[in-house]
Image 1 (cartoon, rainbow, N blue to C red):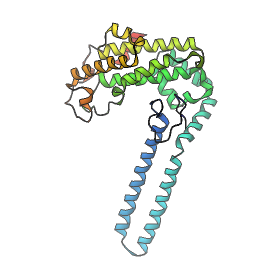
Image 2 (image 1 turned 120 degrees about the vertical axis):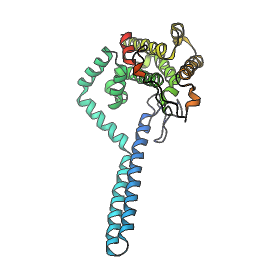
Image 3 (image 1 turned 60 degrees about the vertical axis):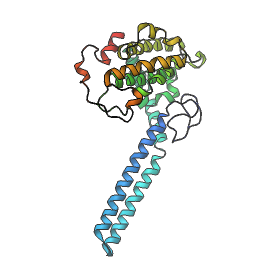
Image 4 (image 1 turned 90 degrees about the vertical axis):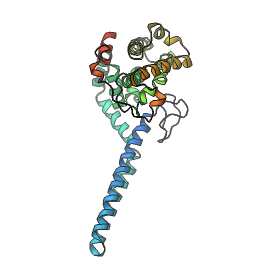
Length: 286
């Protein structure tokens, strides 16, 4: 299959494209499905062995063994089917998108009008619209919304981190996702359908993203105003330094120290009325 960002060949076990380094969502979904199948297979196997052990020898044991073999074959067939589940789902979503094209466009436009970019990304990801040629006019808007959502999740993980911080994937990749967002903005206009509108929407996304970075990472207005013009390395340094300072102020540990560590319980973030919610911050930007 192909990476949706750079078009390079990727494998089912590639969680990240070996060429551009971006996440391969299809492979991640497929891996989760395979893990579920393997878990079901192991559970069936254990149940089968327990039955054989209880049944002991004789004709009863033979019948149990036959039942177990049939059960394992069914699970193996399900696992084999799962190898192509991502492509089956893709075809199903493509048919649904063709059938409901106008309704999907109306929903996308509603998300854009409300500046609800996280829901837009979730909707398009669910229905795999970034791969669909019938939604070509929205392709780069969808890409931008996807990175915006990743940035939003990363900031949420920082702002409302809980006792267990071992799985702050989006926070760890915050600078990478911000850089990817700006790389999308700088795409060659020749590849973008309706570039003027796309750039206008990107500007709105950027405005909200920078507001979130100021509010929850403590970056200054001067910092965020310069963000777009910075080099990738300088932007990365700025975000990661602010991220580390913020996490130390909340937890007493920087991001690198937090990996694999359990932290003491923190104050319920909802009790902190000074900063407000991420949703309230979004409303301020509108």
